[in-house]
Length: 274
Image 1 (cartoon, helix red, strand yellow):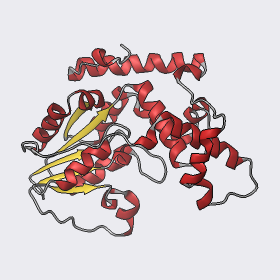
Image 2: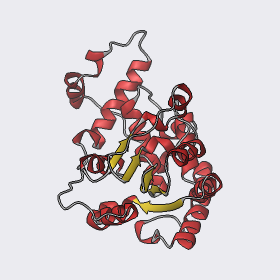
Image 3: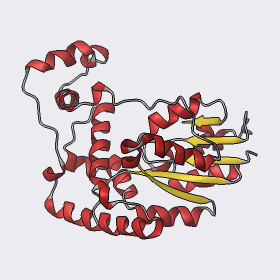
Image 4: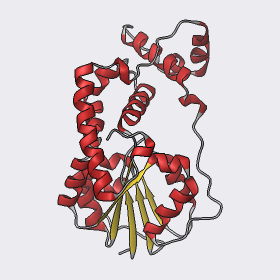
């Protein structure tokens, strides 16, 4: 077994891709990024011994934290990792809940052909699976019931504001110094607001058609042509039902106060509800 293992298991939209790219380029560690070995479906089919090229191992897959789209529960993910590794530290990177959910909603619009409003998405299976993970107190309790391994929470906002310090902290969990030549990816231009508005328009238009052309419908030429028509605005937090918003905000405050007390995280300076 590996002597030191870090399991980075969430959340999505918290810089996961940038960190994963860095892990894969680091020859000092055995990196398992989006590796099916840690999925229950793969385990049920054939359980193989993992091969380590280093005594330092990093597992990184933000999808292991939510039970949606054929991925198992958070507890099952922890059980599988604990069964394969010794001396595991689980890393859960979080993000201010409103910003997180809006980013997940946009990701869903980009990756699918759904034309949901934000309020509708929050009530969909995809949205519910993300809202559940905003209860950081509940996540902590679920993890502690599932494992005796170390548990660390990190802030996406810290990664954005001081990436060098954050990366050094992550590598300290592995027991290594951070690489000198790492470079975190910048935000893709496709993720800007105008792109999402075009994609939302296409998704809603396609849902009204009796057939959907596959490639040409979504290619860059069509997306470019949409620069010349009126597009729907993307929803913000203020567009959801006020009662639903109030209920969620109360839960967010409980979760955030728990993390502030339990883990001494500086949530207030990053705009978390307290």
